[in-house]
Amino acid sequence: MEHLPKVVYGCPEKTIFPVPVEQREKISANCNICRNFKNIHDWKHRMSKVHQNKLTERFRVIKSKMKINLDSVTVHDAEWGKEEEYYCYFCDKPVKKHAFDDGFTVEFMGLMKHQSELHHRASVKSYLKYHRRDENFDVFCKSKGELEKFMAKIPEAKKKYLSKLEILNKE
Image 1 (cartoon, helix red, strand yellow):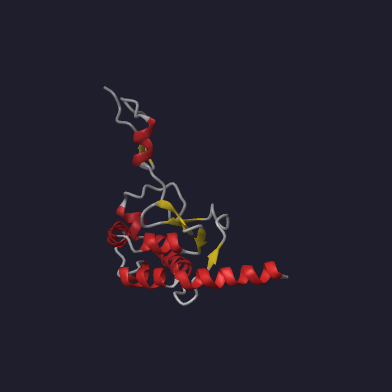
Image 2 (image 1 turned 90 degrees about the vertical axis):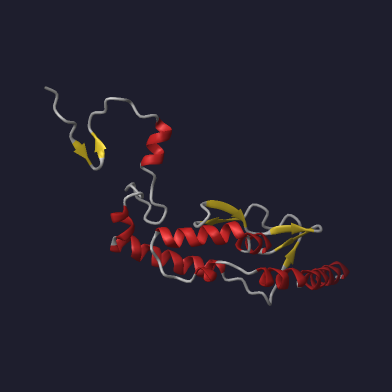
C-alpha cells in the first residue's frame, strides 16, 4: 500500500505527474504587494493584517506618484525622459510616463492617458474587489475631462518652452 504524499506548505512532496514550469509559476505566483512567495490565490494571505497594511502603504505611495498637477504642464525636448516608466500595479504592466507630441516630450502625458483609459478603470475596480478594499476607485483614475484639460494646456506650454529656448540661444 502506497502512502499519501506529505504536503509541505501547499506543495506535495512527491508528485505522480511532473508539473510543467509554466503551470507551476501560475500556481505559485508571488504577491506583488508583499514581495513574498506565498500563494496569492489563497484568500487567507489576502485578508491577513500584514498584507492589508502593506496594501495601505502601497496605496499611499501610488496616490503620491499619481498626483499630477494639471496647472503646470511641462514640455521638454524629444530626448528628455524617453525611457522613464511607471509600473501600474492595477494593470500589472509598465507604462511610459511621458509621451511624445509634435516633436516634444510632454511630462506625464503617457501616465495621464493610461489613467484615463477604460481598461485601467476596470483593472482598478477588479483589483480593489479582489483585495476586498473599500477605497474609492476614482482616486486611482483620471476622467476624460481631466485629460482634455491637460491636453488643452500643451500648446501654451510649448510656446513657453520655445520662448525659453530663444532666450537661451540669444545669449
